[in-house]
Length: 256
Image (cartoon, rainbow, N blue to C red; front, side, top):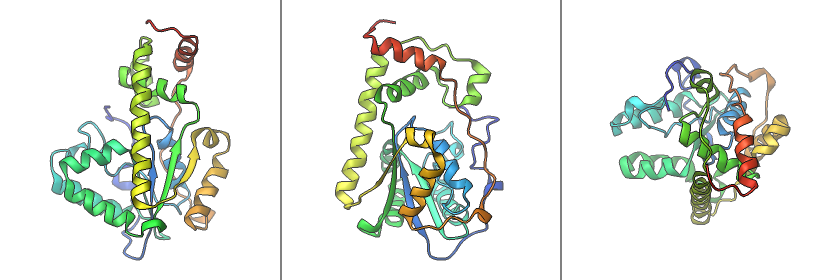
């Protein structure tokens, strides 16, 4: 995914002053295409729930891609994020996917070890907010279409349009991939004895304020409107093509 010309939120101008006190940490655990970027920015906007972006995503085409081949640079970026993306009340969050953690274990095990100790050292008291989608078909279709077209954000739609050809096979593949990643989170919860707060994408769409308030309660954080900050807007992608795919998929159409 090219991010040229897109404000991702990783830019240094969005940093808070470095924080060096005791922290409340949490993971925004999710899988691709759950609306997690939108939710992460809602949490960030409060100014009280950290800025839970993908600080462990070092894909070459991503916002941290310059460090994709340098484990030391990745560690520097992580340490910078911990210091400067902790909100003034001491809350730090990171959004991540199972595949990112798996890839980090393969390419930079030292950083993965640092991250796990930092985020999960409290055992059952560690906090995980897991974002999921109830509509499994729509979820798989969203992943299939993005994987096929290379369009992951609304800004890219305006540049290139979206004419991804329908593929039931890709939808089924996406269903399998998402199920595997969901299972990876369940495995982590079993191993760490963590009970996550489950948040549903559909509830975020219906009442984002209530969801944010519930997350704050789960983390034991008091929201202070005076601490709210301005963050980049996250725009929703056009759903016309996705709805057409869903109608064809649910009708049992198997050919393109």
